[in-house]
Length: 88
Image 1 (cartoon, rainbow, N blue to C red):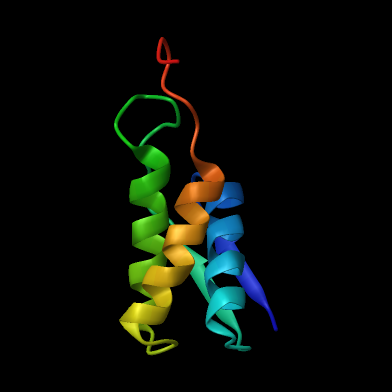
Image 2: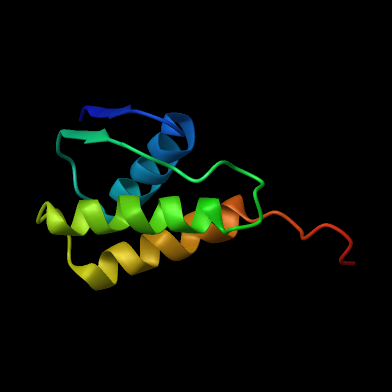
């Protein structure tokens, strides 16, 4: 299995793609290019939006059922969650 990710936020996108692919149980080759990404820690849900974009691309590629991708996204988003500043 080859997973290749390029563009801004490629490290996080690569982690998301690997997690989604693993949770779906699909072994295939993927090349993903991120053209634009919200800067991290901008308070705009950049990680969630990036994960949703990666999951959408995975599903649109016909790699998995949308429900399977949703399960993988839940795992990705939960694992990447950061506490809000000033909360707690």
